[in-house]
Image 1: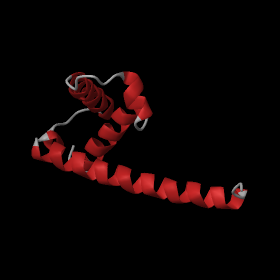
Image 2 (image 1 turned 90 degrees about the vertical axis):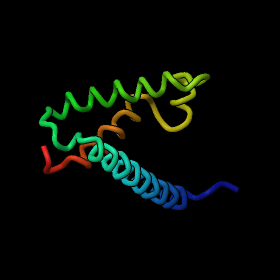
Image 3 (image 1 turned 180 degrees about the vertical axis):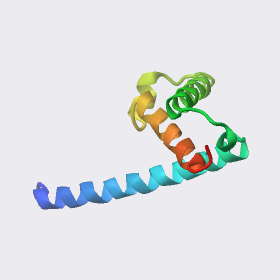
Image 4 (image 1 turned 135 degrees about the vertical axis):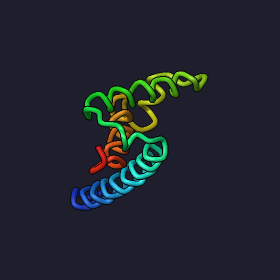
Length: 98
């Protein structure tokens, strides 16, 4: 039996809320790490900071053997989306500090 569209919409809304909460947890975690590392005390353009985090993410992804761009995309988004999450965490951690 197929699900009615209203039920699918409810499920999508629930999943979107779960995604929002997961992204918030990730951003807070990464923000705390960035603050401990002293990133909050550095005056840097947000675009430069995002580029630095993207480079960092590439470095760590490259160090994991057997993982390709395709497998990362299958596990939760593209590399660009994952980098945005990292950058969002850093931005959350340094707000008001730069």
